[in-house]
Amino acid sequence: MIRVILAEDQGMVRGALASLLSLEPDIEVVGEAANGDEALTVATATRPDVALLDIEMPGTDGLAACASITARVPRCRVMILTTFGRPGYLRTAMEAGAVAFLVKDSPARELAAAIRRVHAGERVIDPTLAAAALSAGPNPLSGRERDVLAAAADGATIGDIAAALHLSEGTVRNYLSSAIQKTHARNRIEAVRRAKAQGWV
Image 1 (cartoon, helix red, strand yellow):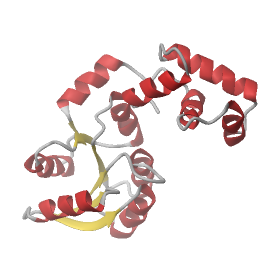
Image 2 (cartoon, rainbow, N blue to C red):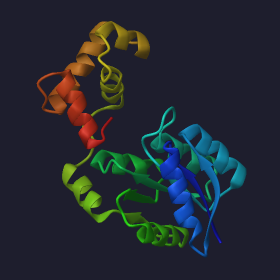
Image 3 (cartoon, helix red, strand yellow):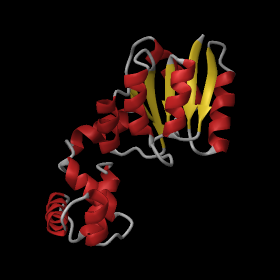
C-alpha cells in the first residue's frame, strides 16, 4: 500500500480527495491536515510514503511545509496540488524538494496515477505549467525584495513594513523601487500584483 497524507485547508475539498483516493486499491490515506504546521506534525507522526500538499493554506503554506517535511521525513515524497498554476510556484516547489506539481483541475484518475509514479521514484510536473515556467525564467526578485513586496501586499505603509522587517524606511523604499523596476510595474500595487501572478511572492 502507498501511504498518503493530505494537507488542504478547505475541509470539503480535503474530504473529497480522501474519499477518491480511498477508492484506489493500493492507496491508503493515513493522515489529514488543514495547514502546513499540521502537515509537518502528521507527516512526522505517520511517516507516509507521499505527502499531497496545497500551496495556499493559513499559517505555514504548502511550499514552506514541503521544505520542512523533506528535511524531517526524507523518505516521504512531496507532491504539490494547487489551484494556482503559477510558474514561480513551480520553481519554488522544486527548490523546496517537491517531486510533483499538479493543478487541481486534473482528473482524479490522473492524481492516483501520479501518486503511483511518484512512489516509484518519478517526477510528475503538469506539462503546461512546466512550459510556462521555462518561458518565464527565474524569479528576478531578491529574497529581501520578495519580503518587502509580500509585506506591502496588504497596503502597509513604509513605516509598517520597516518595523515588521526590522529595516530602515530608506532601505524599504530602495527595495520597493528595485522590485517595481524588476517587475516592470508603475507602482508598488502593480508590482505586488505582477509578482503574485508569476508566483514570485
